[in-house]
Image (cartoon, rainbow, N blue to C red):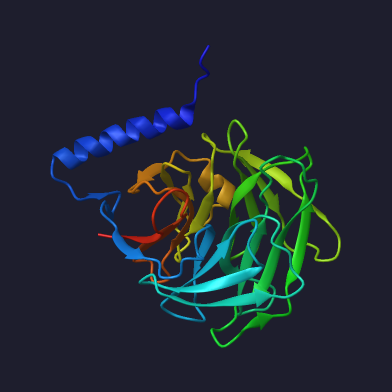
Length: 292
């Protein structure tokens, strides 16, 4: 007997609504243009992107991370797809990096990159981590100071590919991928960088296969990306991230990618970028969906 999958039902209903909207000649959905700007990624080695963040220290560039099998490095990619350089992270392992966030951290006024060492396709690990570092400038070649926020789940192993960091509280939210419905766990600030932290389960989404997530610069919108859809949640000033994720989402425009696992809002909040692994495609493309 076939099992009921709410996520696929939502996707097909929203896809049908989008098709009807397009037939009426509309060029946008939920305030974003349907057709994205498209840029070819110039560096062939950037073929397994799993997370992106719009740089504040290097305006006009995105930070890109790649998942397992790649060096422990972060990469600067111009908004037009042109690769600039890679920066090595010292004394860090890339077991399976799966998302990337730029947000506030322990030092006031300093931006930090948070790297999600949370992938676990075979569900064999008992420990996971978030790596945190002060955002470097393009002049850097190596970052030597990287904090490791180790953690474990109270209910065993999980494969997670999406994280969010609350810029106000600095709490970290981890969203699992392959549970029947994606679970949401929380690391409450201040978390330890010397002993393993216990992640607290705080909620569940109405779908699964979450592969990336992002908060808009204003903090008024959260998006969660799956392989075939982008879900948007409006957020009120007083709401926690989980209170926002408990709402019914709205579907945003998305051009199907070979294996799209990364999303971020632009720092000026003019739209959002997506980036995919190459998979079976002939090349990698960076997409930008502009606000109307």
